[in-house]
Length: 418
Image 1 (cartoon, rainbow, N blue to C red):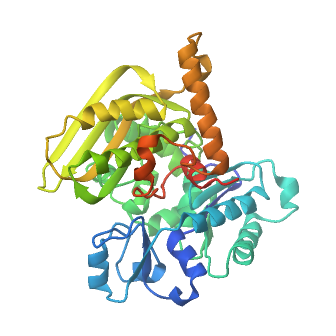
Image 2: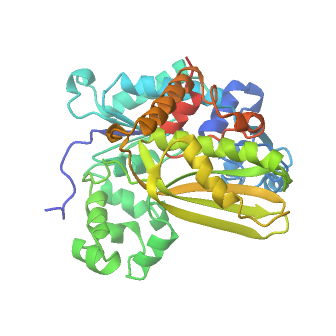
């Protein structure tokens, strides 16, 4: 059934604001336009680039490049600290533009979104999705900024629409359909395919699949039984042909927070307020995703190069800031005495959908939940960390809220204002 390409008309549009944070900074600071520059979450001598401008990418400065390496490549490279207020404004403006065309939109990340045009023929009013795409490009320039560039891809499913959006960067607009899908795969390399990293690429090549066109022509049975040895092979067979297999909520394996200690120390009076802020952030993330956790892990890096890792699984689930802090602190307090901490990583795992609506008849549990919901309501209205635990007071002045990648739920909560 799925040997042939999906015969449907392309009705999925993928919009990608590439080099988003860097481009937004160039929009806001005209003197940086056309120059190699980047953005980092927290400025320091060895900070990493989390977004690079097109000009920086052309020189080989990419996401993850250390500041010192970037300057070695280009002594005039400019790096700025992230500015969430700017990104918030662009994010919501882009989302508003997308929502004006279809009620079925999905923000896949801060700078990527999908519009599903199925059933939206009256809105199209006889226009093609290519026409709509060029209109959206112009609206982004008019309503967000003339320096902003977006890549647009149009196809039969989420996967191919994303591939089309990456075909010709920057500022491209491409359609992948039944007429050119093979030409597209012939032009690409194996690791140009979204979702094919080194591990999957090695598995494919071990089975004599070395190019995307060979991947496309591989039989479903070979992919399922020989290459991936699971139903994943079937998913890839359908995905490559334009059938939708990705339009569902993905399972979240971990929720956590990492922080490089601003002033490395072993002293609790500095570390614990910051540790508490990290735990409160994790609690907010869990609740924003409607999740509860059973396990928690604390990983530390010390100034002498050694590392520490302690984790524990609990019988009952947890989701409040206080519960996250209490459980994480149990593991944190097991660290070697006197060791100078340079990095803290806390994550929760064994996640399940929240059962907060089925708390039962225990008054103390209900009171805790009511209090948590009340605090969340205040913070959602007036901004994150309007209300927080007393121990976090000094930490809120030290720990900078990182711009998250991937999902958008926590990003929206982080930046929400009344």
